[in-house]
Picture 1: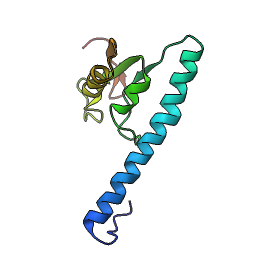
Picture 2: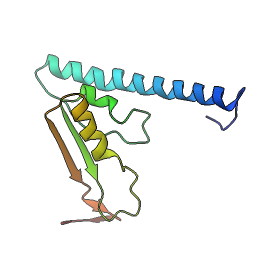
Picture 3: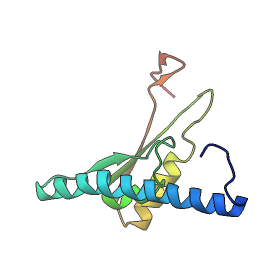
Picture 4: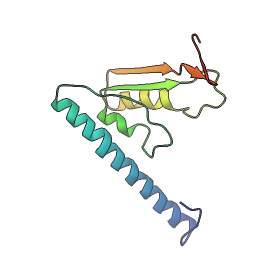
Length: 117
C-alpha cells in the first residue's frame, strides 16, 4: 500500500489482493447487502448506480444486492474516469439475472449544464 515490497513481489501482491478482496466483500455485504435486506423487508426495491472506481468494491459484485442496476456515461469529457460503468452494470445485471438496467449521461461537463448530446 505504501509501495514497499515485503518479502517478495509475489508475497506483496498476494497480500494486497487479499486486502482488496476483503475491503470489497465488507462494503458489498455490509452496505449493499444491509440496504437490500432492509428494503425488501419493507416492500421496497433497491436501485444502485455502478460503483465509483475510487471505492474498493468489485465493479459487478454489488449487483447481487441491487434490483435495478444503473450506470452513467460521459460525453465530451476531458477524461473518462468511469469507463466501465455501463459494462459493469450490464454484466452485473446478466450475471445476477436482473431484468432492469439503466444508463444516464452526466448533465454537467466542464462546469456547464449540457442540455443535449
